[in-house]
Structures are given as C-alpha cells and as structure tokens.
Length: 175
Length: 98
Image (tube, rainbow over all chains, first blue to last red; front, top):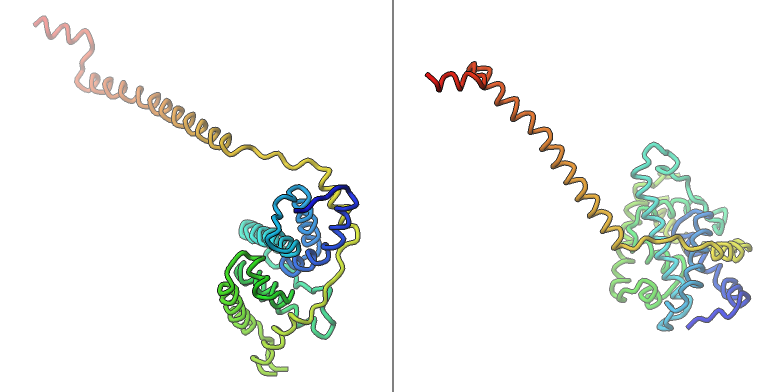
C-alpha cells in the first residue's frame, strides 16, 4: 500500500514516475498540453486515493492503468465535442502531431503513424501504444488493461491490420 | 518505394521514438491542483428526485392547460347549437307551455 507521509515523499514519488506517465499519455492524446494536464490528474488521483493500489501488480502497472483510462476518457470527450462543434475547424482537423522524441529523418513517417493511430478504436489504440511504443510484454499489457493474454494478442492483431488499412489510404505515392 | 514497404517502415517508426522529459514544474502543478477543493458532486438520488419532481410538475401543468383550453370549447359548442336552432333559454319555457 502506498503511504505518502509528507510532501517530500510524494514529490519523490512524482519525480520517479512522472516521465513514464507523461510519455505514455503523450503517445495516446498526441498533444503536449493535454498530456501534461492528464499526467497531473493521474498523480492527483494517486494522492487522493492511495488505497486504490492493492499491490496485486507493480506501481508502474497501476499508474499506466490510471493514465490509460484518463487518456481514453479525454479522447472520447474530444471526439464528442468535435461532433458537436462542426463549426470549429481546429477541432475537426487537428494539426499533425510531431512527437518531440522522433528523429528528424523519421518525422514524416511518425506523423503518418500517429494520424493512423487516431482512427484506431480505444482498446486497440491502448494495446498498440503499450506494446509497440512502450515495449511492454503481453503479460504486462494484460495487467494494465485488465484483460486476458489472448485478448491482448487479438487486439494487437486487429490494431496492426487496421493500421495497415488506414496507412494504405494515406500512401503518398512512389518517390 | 512500394506501398507495402512504406507501410512497414511507418509501422517500424513506432519503435524509434525516444522518451521525452516531462515538464520539471509538473509537481508544482499537481500540488496546486491538490490545494483546490474537488468539484462538489451532487448525489445521484437528488438528481433523480429533481427530475421526477420536474416531470410531475410538467404533467400537472399540461393537464391544467388542456382542461382550461377544452372548457370554453365545450361551452362554445353548446352556444353554437342554441344559436343554430334558435333556442334561447326562455324559448324552451315558451314551447313547454304550449
């Protein structure tokens, strides 16, 4: 069980985990300001409900679970608003996301990848980020997402198929 | 470059993203959020009770409005009938006496 005796203990906890949480959220929501906001919300939840961690899995797995749930909620809310706010072209057509951790030579490809990822259904999106971008094992993914190993395999298979389909439609042509 | 090769390369680019450092002032932001009181949440049973009360009030209003609208109509139909047949109230007494 987590126990934040004082401010410094909690600060140390944040310092230890904030980069991991921020990076995973950034890959999900593809917006730096939103990712920072969600990362803060994750730690606020942790501080307010430390009892929610029962020790069945590692703290990182638990943090990833909270981060993933918050990211998915955020994406859903944004999609809902984009349906209502058809007058707002900025929401309907978000600018291409350029991840700050992508090398210059891969920038174009990564931009296409993030664009295709936006079209994936929630669970496939989560599984893909955890597996292909965070390099988590199937077992770790099953713990984060609270699903069976076979479901993880199936989600990743479908995510790959869908991404290929979406990317096929984005192919810029022979160079 | 062929399409399938291009897709494979795009998918492989997922592995080549290096982690980035988060905002160094993140902890300060978290502490500021913790200082704020959590948004007050209205208990669900109060929401249901309010909705039920509003619905009842709405139904009562509609039924009163309907009754109020129907009453003059019925009267006017009777008046129309009386006028069409030339019956005034005293005519009825007059006919009976004959």
